[in-house]
Length: 430
Image 1 (cartoon, rainbow, N blue to C red):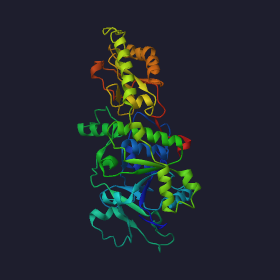
Image 2 (cartoon, one colour):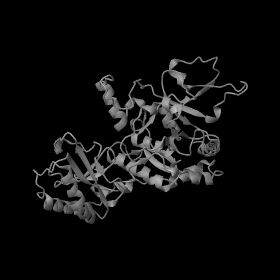
Image 3 (cartoon, rainbow, N blue to C red):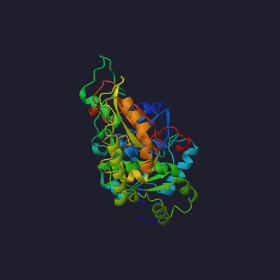
Image 4 (cartoon, rainbow, N blue to C red):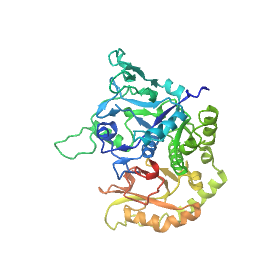
């Protein structure tokens, strides 16, 4: 544990606003990414909170070549993920100062334990002369040019106190931005699968995968309670899906609190108190009242049995086939927490918590199945569960049988839950 104000036992990965129209963006690894369902990208300017929440949802920080003015700043064969070891107090002061100058930084960040990051391969950069770059190939990614005597402008990035994690597993694959049907643009199965992973999940070798490393107690620096709710919602969703353990992300620091106490946050004890105050309380959501759970399940059983044979399986007014489900508005609600882990809740990879009753989807018609949910079941279920509900429908243009339609396909119709959308351009997220 450090007790000097110029040292820290944490290292920080800050995010920044990204302009898709910028030349450096066009050269970056992020350029090849399509934005998935659940990501609202309506403008070229992407907020730092959008990027931060995307990292959480993907559980991956992209490794990049760090382009500046069209040129890569990373030497060697491996892209990197960048961090700074400046104390949180210095990050606060630096982000305020650099943002005022229009420089590429933000007040949003992930905070890691320095010892853990070193254990998985993170290293401080090596500042040196470009004339004496005598590093082994596996260390070249650490090199940063330094020449304070150069005229008319010095080369000096030491204020960044940078660390880098090299992605030694990176594979260079040219992946198109979209799926081309043109016969002149043939796509092999490998590229098609990489495109799917890129847009729907993640490509494993594209970055630092937070869930595959021995990391814990990662923190966030955010600005608002609303952002904290969205982050908590996503963490709980990842836990419910079994993707992460509860101890991976554990606290939130609020930038306004840090800024207001900028004279005090030099003190490590004060930072520890803010971390304790900002603990993400996940365990209460994971504790279930068995009696209350049994009562709700009994009511759902009765309701489902009441409606199990109310639709004609042969009814099909035309159109497309499809499935439809009642859907929770909030995965933090008491009813959702009681039913997670039972047969009555199915969680999609996009973060929807669906109520899965045996009486659903008795026909092949998406129209009839959806009408049954929205006009019959949802009002009854809302009374039982004491929470508002929406709906979620997935169709098949190819008229696939309802038993063959995946819940993880892009939904045809749904009332959006604002907590689920990761919006790219909310003014309060910059």
